[in-house]
Length: 571
Image 1 (spheres, rainbow, N blue to C red):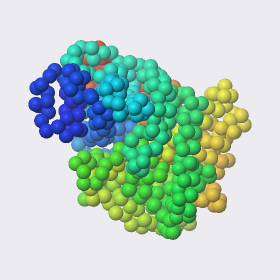
Image 2 (image 1 turned 135 degrees about the horizontal axis):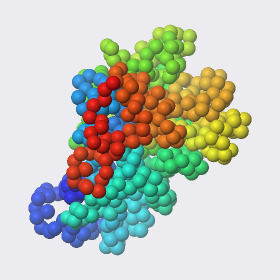
Image 3 (image 1 turned 180 degrees about the horizontal axis):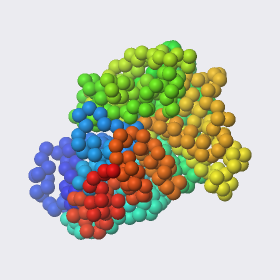
Image 4 (image 1 turned 45 degrees about the vertical axis):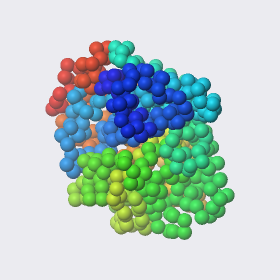
């Protein structure tokens, strides 16, 4: 999609956002730039409408699909499902072409343009509308800068280098938007500087409880900053940003305890408040996933795309790709090794006491369906270490397509901090293979964070004996790094995180060997060719769309896809 097309798409979205009866009549009155400048932006509600359209853009099927495809599908978590399209099959087998629809980035640039539009016109409206205060304007700017940063963050993790535009498209001069790609490091540096400058302007908490997770708040900006810093390799800043989120959640927990006393299902695991597997007054498990993924906007949520039942816009991605009330296995499935032989103790990822394998996956004939988001509730007896059979799960599958899509939640941040602490320790001792004795304080802190997440899912309270033992992971830094990576896989699978985690690891290590070891496990054929393709840094990123290359001569194709090198993978 050209920038000119994005402008028209954005203008149409604005018409829809404010309920205009005839966009065509509106467009016929003036050239587009004059419409936007003179006839539309006059009061605070006009800015609010564009902000709403930013969220609407992120909620689109095109955006959510790419969040999942870019962040998850190439990982070891996802395999072919039921009725998988040929395009999806080729993607899952690492046959990625510049002609694939997944290489199209227009949905994200459309949201970016809407954010840029708010930034451009909000100061003008603040001068025109006496009821639009400077503090409200600054909060709006912080909000849309965070949404813009989120969009660019997805783009650079998917493509590495992308065109970087910070001004809105308000005229028909398309040429000035045909620009070369800006390097990854330059973009991520801009984003953290931009967010640091506005983070304290953002709203801490809205009066509407659901808005605290459905809109980008100050806590959401800190979560995004933590993620950006983790990719940037600034581990001190990552830890500091994580601590801001942790403090906010602890304050929220203390408020809940003061309000509800023991009638809350949020408990302290180590010193971190998390939703218990047991609903208040119950001894059965499954409450965690019910609250987080079934109901949505939970205590642990930081930022999620919110879909309201029986509204016009739904989350069709979940029904199509993960499954529905009528389809146990969607277009993709969970890779079998994730869930096989857990009850007997032979699974390498999950222990048989871990509730997550029961909450997130289920066997359906020869495949494993993805249950995260597709169920509204889970109830089952807590799995026991002494049992070699899995407890029966009483689940209610979602009968609609209004599942939320979570972008950041609390355990994600806890595990970001654990990862950053290990790297921070390695930097502090100035030794990339630092001895465990020197690293001990950092490793112990990281282990405690992992233990909190792990214990919650294994029904281990602060009074229980830990089954995750520090001594088992303390011998080497690499062992502790693997523990954090594995816990992120257990906790965040199918949320659009795993492939990005593996790419971040490969970037830090300076080679793709460990990434290849993980992702090759799901491949059934052409493994040698896949190893070769993924052996280069270029191969970890998507190609630029063939359409974009035709429209923008300043773009130079990723070398991994240049000259049609990736047309076919074969031995």
